[in-house]
Image 1 (cartoon, rainbow, N blue to C red):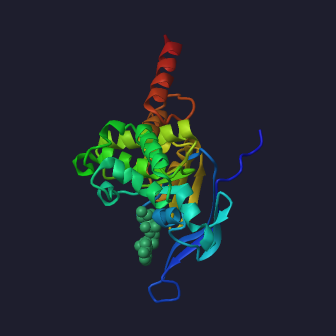
Image 2 (cartoon, rainbow, N blue to C red; image 1 turned 120 degrees about the vertical axis):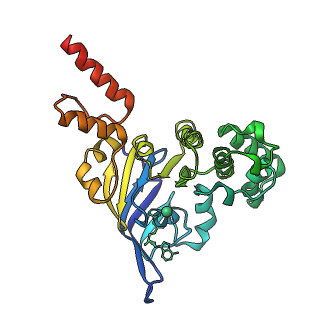
Image 3 (spheres, rainbow, N blue to C red; image 1 turned 90 degrees about the vertical axis):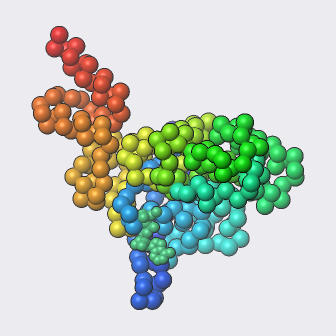
Length: 286
Ligand code: ADP
Ligand code: MG
């Protein structure tokens, strides 16, 4: 099978805030990265490592100081491509309350398509589809401020979906939520990838959430320090520690058991995998 073409190509991207002033901050340095269609990428890194800055380049909210970013064949530096890029790559941010603009759920979701100038029946169709896709259709007439955090984030996701994006960037969109809200939002993100083929870039501090991605990219001081499937990235315990990142709990337990002499096979990342390996060992002994 041939390698699918890139959806987003980041090439030697450097971003400097307040360039040429005494307050200059080099937030992203020489980052090269490819996001493929329908890929689920977790972006991790400590505070100030450059995650949000990199994310804002994926839909042209920021433009490169050096290097370039190409989205679906469109260069973010091309002013004529700006709106098309923002339509194709949507963003969901940390605080659900800052993202909702209307007083009724369905009006909020309609906001984007209305700005595209679509006919009313097309807007209605998209709003319904988007709310159904995030499991919020029955809340269409509700007031957003009465919803839970997880539900508000799902409304924000529906607003992005109504633009028919090819990629959604979640910038710590689960950070402020309770465990149930986190699960709702994460499940929604996985479903959108599985069912609609939408690429997901999920910025998170949770290594458990990162372990569910196809690929984990770790940033430190504006540079990519690790990039690969979770099983490979979470094998690099020492490197992760150096950049102040944890392992998922299950990987720590796995390492702990191995240190105590339990002969486990491949690196376990999920509770069920570790349980299966332990059960197999027990059977081998009996
Ligand atoms: P993260 O999302 O990983 O916490 P950011 O991309 O927000 O990291 O920040 C990376 C670096 O850029 C930090 O040193 C931060 O202080 C700096 N920074 C972020 N936004 C701005 C800004 N608007 N102006 C100046 N410096 C900024
Ligand atoms: Mg951030």
